[in-house]
Image 1 (cartoon, rainbow, N blue to C red):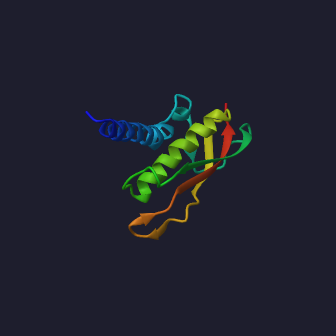
Image 2 (image 1 turned 90 degrees about the horizontal axis):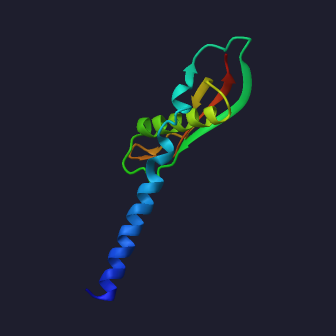
Image 3 (image 1 turned 180 degrees about the vertical axis):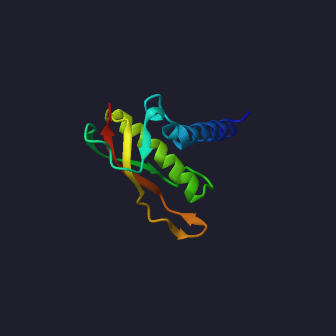
Length: 119
């Protein structure tokens, strides 16, 4: 095998591994993130407000995903970020993305919410 072919194969494999590593690892719920709940009503007075958090899913490495799929990934990252802050509840979560440039080109999905620790 020539050096040129070996270099091309090596570069292709390295690129594929890099893109795979960047594409989905942050969008799986962590153990703590899977315990965080989204709620629609204001948390009880005994819940402590910890701050706001954000989850974001970029379209660059996502392939051909719909906005619904992208926002689901952003919500998963939001839950993980809330857990990292010590929270277990997200209130007033909102999709703050720009939605679409066009029907076939979704923009990055962004979800924000207020993080609380409720005992």
